[in-house]
Length: 238
Image (cartoon, rainbow, N blue to C red; front, side, top):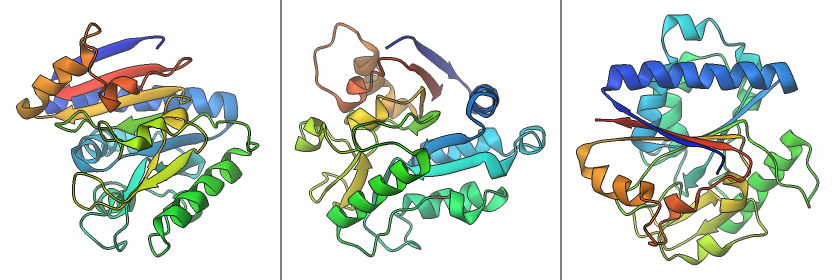
């Protein structure tokens, strides 16, 4: 990990700083590559992300045609389900911006989980133009923090943590409902140029301390997020 910074504050201040952070990465990505490619997560991280971006000044500063939105993980549920990360993102963020539909890349949850994961991996490679031997570089990946130290749909002590060949994989036995999910793998997450963890609530402060403790040897999935050439920033709402 090149750098790891933690920002802990009230929601309004975290949202302000997060908005500026996303805008700076967006500006750099447009300057260097002409596109901004981001991976979003669900849950409370999506609410805070939306709070950060959906203010008038920032809304008018983005060229939404340059965005490519992917989802870090998804549950095998109907697209209209309250458990769908895409549905959550649509309700709190996407419907308020003008990202073209063909640049919002969703999992096909009508497929079997293996097939959905493979199709999504192919969609990522097609968008990034990478070969099968290459791992794409997202400009920014947004992650949350679970009370058990999980992130995306990467759960403690699960075989999914050992996946090294695929960019996207699946599991049918997640310890949280719903159990069938697709998820970015650690190799894809750890190849991002920038990673932002967004979390909130006093209930997560204990696990956050374990994650940030460099001397802790506990194999938490969140601690396994360690990009070799990227940066990690924490945005924590008190």
